[in-house]
Length: 102
Ligand SMILES: [Zn+2]
Image 1 (cartoon, rainbow, N blue to C red):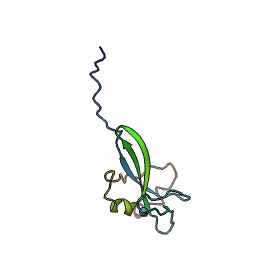
Image 2 (cartoon, rainbow, N blue to C red):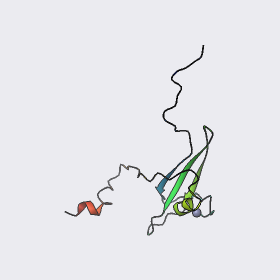
Image 3 (cartoon, helix red, strand yellow):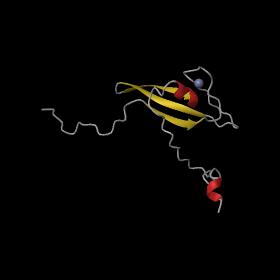
Image 4 (cartoon, rainbow, N blue to C red):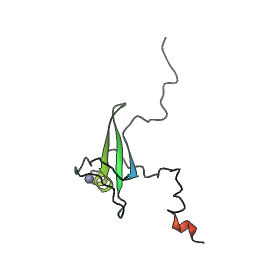
């Protein structure tokens, strides 16, 4: 018999999801909504939304949006996860001037 009792997935990781990220310098991807290049701009520090799109349980593709375009599209893959990526570079203190105020 091939009956398995532990087949109930408790963690569903095979569904479309979206994350919000900083745009990296040298980015060459295009927003699938407006078709414009998702460009790094040092002054503005724009955000992008990266979506892992699944068809059923199979990963299908990655879609990139400008963050405003993703909102404009109606968040087709759910709300973007804005949890920042923990970087191992020593930027934490620099990027948190608030924390340095005594
Ligand atoms: Zn766009």
